[in-house]
Image 1 (cartoon, rainbow, N blue to C red):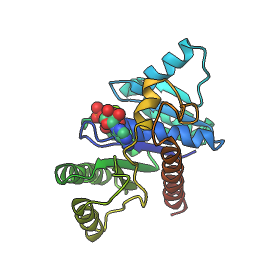
Image 2: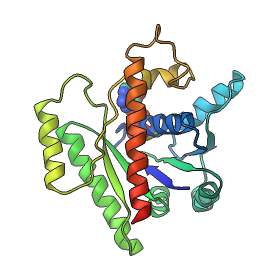
Image 3: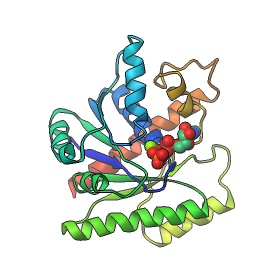
Image 4: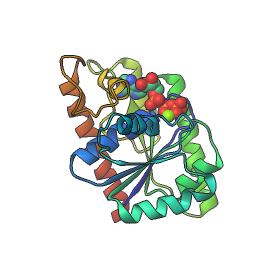
Length: 227
Ligand SMILES: Nc1ncnc2c1ncn2[C@@H]1O[C@H](COP(=O)(O)OP(=O)(O)OP(=O)(O)O)[C@@H](O)[C@H]1O
Ligand SMILES: [Mg+2]
């Protein structure tokens, strides 16, 4: 049912990776998932095409490059037929992004834990708040740390998290950790389950992290739906 957009006008913030990891994990847990690939790079759609060419099944449905004029209809259709609809958005503010935000039960904003990226994430929040104002109702959102350091929390990271907490902005309690596995899934046209631990380091930790992030996102979206 819920539609979850992954948005941040900052290029390379980790939107496609977060969308993909979430889709894979939710599908693995038994949910029916549709990914609307509205990223002009069409990374997830390309991944799906490669798998199909190789005769591998798709763990979730992929809607490639929807037209701006059709996006709302597509979101409405898939929220009726699937347990989760995830929308991977482009790295710029656009009408496509506005429409997706307006139809979302939750917007995830991934951002890298650097001062510059945190400031740009604040712009993403402002953009969502502007959209909400135009719409006349709140658009629920949640910041998500992207490419977290697996081993240590740096002083900079702590400062950024403290600033977000002080500003009373919602932050997902678990971040997506920087892992080779999250790159290898694209490289090998694979899911996290299919990757070989002999070829990908830190795979077990990546699977655990994917599980925890998906769990936290499900909790956050359920909370929004209950409101
Ligand atoms: N958690 C992670 N672990 C390892 N690599 C990551 C992680 N998150 C993102 N990356 C890498 O960082 C780069 C940018 O990530 P991604 O493509 O997901 O960002 P994006 O926000 O979708 O970018 P765009 O705005 O261009 O659509 C990619 O090379 C991706 O493989
Ligand atoms: Mg992307």
